[in-house]
Length: 165
Ligand SMILES: [Zn+2]
Image (cartoon, rainbow, N blue to C red; front, side, top):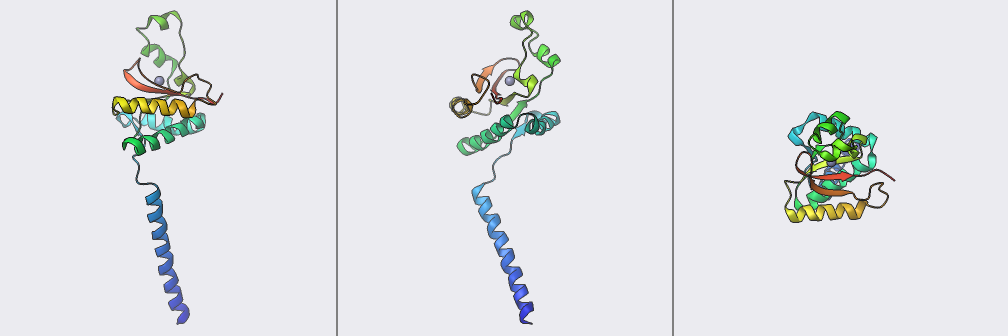
C-alpha cells in the first residue's frame, strides 16, 4: 500500500516538474512570430529548408534576424526570394542595359542571397536592421556588405548576402 501511495505521489510530482519546465521554457522564449513567406509560397518554404543544407550560415542569419526583429519591433521576417535560376535572373533584369551588356549572376543563384520584405518595417527600423546585420556578419563574409535595403528588380526589399569566405 505504501509503495502504491509513493508511486502515485511520484507521478504527481513528475507531472508538476514537467509543467514547471514547460512554464520556464515559455518564459525564456515568449512565443516569437515565426519566419513567414511571401504569399505563403510553398516553393519558398521548401527552399528555406534546403537553405539549411546549402548555406547553413545564411540560414542561421535568418533565424537570428527573426529573433532580433521580434525582440526589437515585435515583427517577423517575411522571405520574398531565396533561390533564383538563370532564366529568372534574365527576366528580372530584362530592361537593364547593364545586364544586356554583361549577363551578371546574382548571389541568389548560388544560395548566397535572400530577400526580405521591407514594407512591414518603418524607415528607422530598416536602418537599424541593416546596420545590425552589417555589423554582426561582416566578418568572415565573402561579400563586402551583408545587407542593403534597395529598390531593384521586384521593388523595394532587403537583400541579404552571405557565404563563408
Ligand atoms: Zn536579393
